[in-house]
Amino acid sequence: MPFPSGRRTIHDFTTEPVEEAAVARAFAAAQEAPCHKLTWPWRFTRVGQAGKAALIALNKQLKGAGRALTPAQEAKLEARMGNPELIVVSQVLAADPMRRKEDYAAVACAVQNLCLSLHVDGIGSKWGTGGVTRHPEAYALLGVDPALEEIVGFLWIGHAADVVPRPPRPPLDEVVRSVP
Image (cartoon, rainbow, N blue to C red; front, side):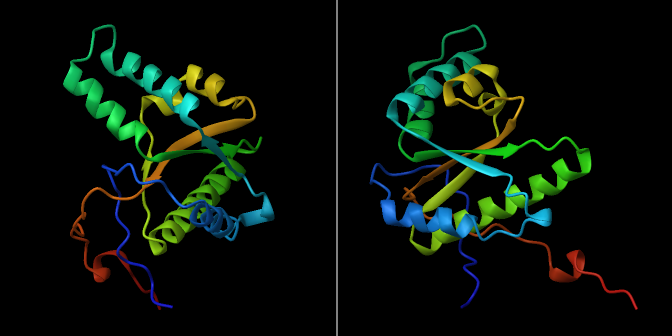
């Protein structure tokens, strides 16, 4: 099977619903990620409409930083956060710092598998790590205990509103080296 190299980060989504079967396949693909020491540190939380509304309100508060957002800013934030589905990605926290680093790598591999699976099904994604992902109120809203798990990002999934061009990439000889 050729590598699905057309995957891009999607910033704007349509309101078309995401097929449940595609999401199930994506979670199954995530479970196939490489995982050093078989710790399976990834956790995925699907967020419904009420949860998204609460996170949008929190994000408005954070983005406003004590001042009111303009109607245009509010509309943009609501469209960006409200249209796609939201999956919160968290990592089970290991006591050992090296294990945490290895586990984060495994979580990133799981997210990549999930995103590639969605891409194959024609569904776009965006992994976001803004301030709301680290806010204590977000942890409380999502039922994530920060003593046990760290939220490593929000994964927005949905149908792309437009085509995203391939960004330039460095030549392989700049990123691959060989030693005798």
